[in-house]
Image 1 (tube, one colour):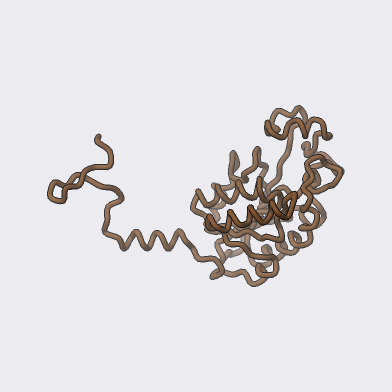
Image 2: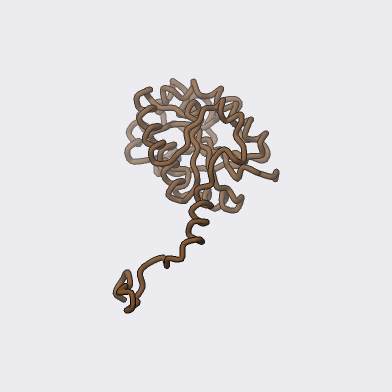
Amino acid sequence: MRSNSTRSAYIIIDMENGFVSPQSAHCIAGAAATIPACVKTVALAREKGIPVFFVKRLYRTDGSDVELTRYETWDQGGKACAPASTGPLSAQAPEGLKPQSGDYTIIKPRFSAFFGTELDLLLRRLDVRTVILAGATTPNCIRATCYDALSLDYNVVLLDDCCSSQTEEIQIANMGDMRRIGAVIMSSREFESYGPETVPDMLEKVRRSMEADPQPPEPFSDPGEGRVQLDRW
């Protein structure tokens, strides 16, 4: 395993034929156009020693694990993304976006790459502080993963030209929401100069602030100061 001075991980989500191919009922309109930028940034991440996680969705052929809100489209649209499938409705990745030796693969059961997977465990073992997100689709899997990552105290970077939505309006609105909640937005070109100092480590900043603060974490009974416990045990 190479040294990872950025303490980051590159996570690319659902870049598979079933979500990219126009022949699929689940095709994301803007996904195919992002393939060149995704290929470029995956290669850059490897060069920088940043671990790459390929996160994908597989649907059992009986539909037992398909999202309720997606089941009808999946059932009537050719039952895409089956295990070991091939062709335009398959879970195969576009050329240039297949895992290589040294990469990680995650199979997720729902929208977020963290939900029901080992991703958080692996990132913590790798001492990762920042997740870099790319893939499809911005308002669903990217957004769900972004919010879960922020909830788990990771810094989040979104590569905007490596993410896709059904319309430009949806893309802009969701990127704006995630920027406002704390994600850092950058382009694939800006990612070329990504390094250890690019993204401030907010968790480390908060920890230093806590260590310097003499305040206890919650109120406690102290008759002299008139304080009471948070809960009346």
